[in-house]
Length: 301
Image 1: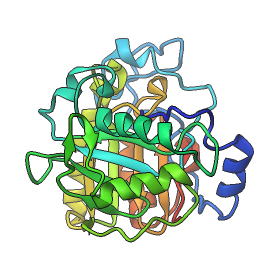
Image 2: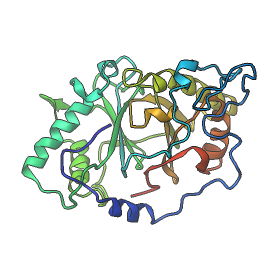
Image 3: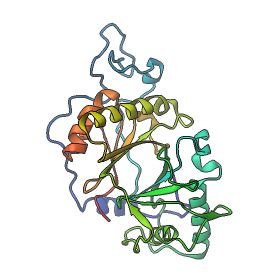
């Protein structure tokens, strides 16, 4: 998860006011599962102290299930934009608990921001401008791509020199605008491409950060792909593993970005829940409150 080095980019009250400008379309129909509930509980298995019960149809290691929090209030990352570095599943960043610890797109963004902050004063003082993760979505070249939400844009082939983003690129100009004032509209996104899908699902699969998401995340990705294939939604929906964005104790964790709906975080998701999530959220545009951790990007800026 990417944090800025400034003191506090938005006050909590500012974030609350921003998010209060639109209503979340929560699904009025009850979700068929409680948090982390199995669709086919193993009646012969002993329930763990935290309430975890294995599922006959969707196995998950009991030792990890016992370490998942199923009762505490779930929180969300406080952000209004999400940058996603597309680096592929073989990138070195996946070998570290903190993806910014080695040279790569995350480290380059942070280094570039630190340089910018030494010379500029943001119009809106604050702490965190964007949520940023890396994903298993491959880049189109040997340079990383970056997706931007809620704009549903992708910048292909981010150039950097000595770990600093090319200042002449429209990618840098977009970042500069966000650093200056995240509430302002972005400058024209020249050289940015539209993301073809209208929904992008990002599931935390970052095993080096925590095994709960590291083990459960890939199973959820596979189940999403199975359901999406079954429903013929391949041209509308992308599903990728992503790095840590907070709250591993609420595994499985995922973010769904959808045009017109914004970006929403879910926690305590099991494979059992995926068909209902695809039906309720992706196909009918309804947010599922029972497993909702919050909003990470509004429908539009």
